[in-house]
Amino acid sequence: MSRFGFTITKARFIDYESNDRRISEYISEMEPSFLRCIECGCCSATCTAAGFTKFSLRELNILIKRGENKEINKTIRKCMLCGKCTLVCPRGVNTRNVITLAKEAYQKAENHAV
Amino acid sequence: MSKNVIVIGGGAAGIEAAGQLAMAGYPVIIIEKGQEIGGHLLDWYHLFPDRRNSVEVVSYLNDIAENRNISILKNRQTEKIERNKGNFHLRTSAGDEIEAGAIVVATGFDLFRSEKKEEYGYGIYDNVITSADLEKMFRAGDILLKNGKAPSKIGLVHCVGSRDEKSGNLYCSKLCCVTAVKQAIELREKLPSSKVFCFYMDMRMGGAHYEELYLEAQEKHAVSFIRGKVSEVGVAHNGSLVIKAEDTLAGRPIRIELDMLVLMAGMEMSEGGRKISSDLHLSTGSNRFFSSIDNHYGSNLSNENGVFYAGTCTAPMSIPETISHARAAATEVIRYMKNTGK
Image (cartoon, rainbow over all chains, first blue to last red; front, top):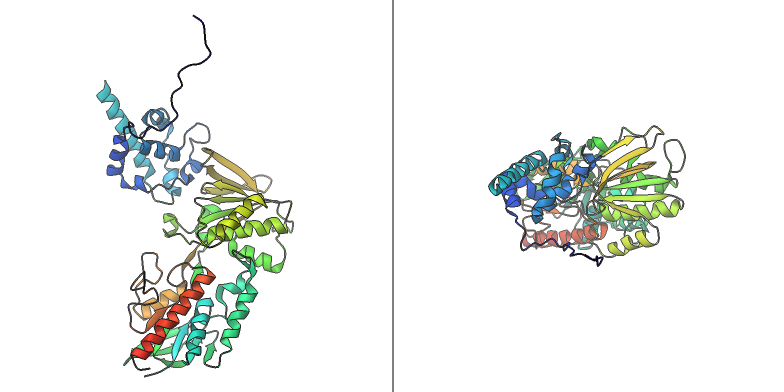
């Protein structure tokens, strides 16, 4: 078969209309401080995992809120729950609980899929 | 009933309010804790956004204070304030006894004590200074490191003690962003070979001509703006300061070595204000500043009849805002005095 040199490219849009934001809603309900984040990045700056892996709690927060679930599931396991992010957060987000809840929610979602 | 008005605080707000009241014929007694009038302006170099020398504004205030209806008691604090049949009776720390029909509280603000934000190293590392320290250096004429050399890489940290639950202050001090931009420009002018970095969470350039100043800092002075809150400051082997933040727009952590770090200290309710608030039972908000009885049309009015607010004792304000607020306070005092037959 001949190669034409082009493929179907996936759109880069955050497809807000079809994205599933139930995980975000679940976390917001269980840990309302999740809603307080202002994306300052202080958590990621101090993060032990972020220095060596592509892990950013700040980015994770916003991706969860937008329902970009596939991306999150890949990175969330890199968190070691050391809690340094909680110490520096200017908005008092209970970051460790956000991670724990997110993991829990993804676990549930996966189980349902099976 | 006394026609006197007591003004507590001889900064921009106190002097402006006193001037308006004196012109309207009321004898005004200003109580100032310092040796000079002018408040924080006395420590500042140039003012934003036009970078006017603060000395000019202080001399404007000194001219006002010449009014013969104004007497100023310096080096004094209020010791006791009592209410007696519609009059106030105030005793100062020097023992003066004053009767007055109304009080204008113009106790201003205190700068956030940056050593409380320990992870930024103020008071620990030699070359971590505050915005106020930098203004003093500008006034003295030289920007120098502890070792006497000029810095070549300087960082400015926005929101120190503001918008920070860990510092106990959730509010925005509003003027630190523009102060940082002004100081960044002045650093670049003073030290043309230096590099200057601003670490910000959001650029709040809401005042008239602030945004233009920001543009000037980018375009004319090549100041680097990094969107991320500094998480901690350490020291490298060579003695430079190591700053850690997330460059949130690049989506990666950033590590940068600097010679000097300037912390933009936020504004807090003053200690003097807190004392008066308990003496006169004046209500304060969750931000600890005085809270007025109406945010929209009564920002000078306190919950106590005859007690009025002027300036930054109610919220962070710029100099022009403070002056306008103080004039409005004088209007309220005059209305009150007339209504009560004073």
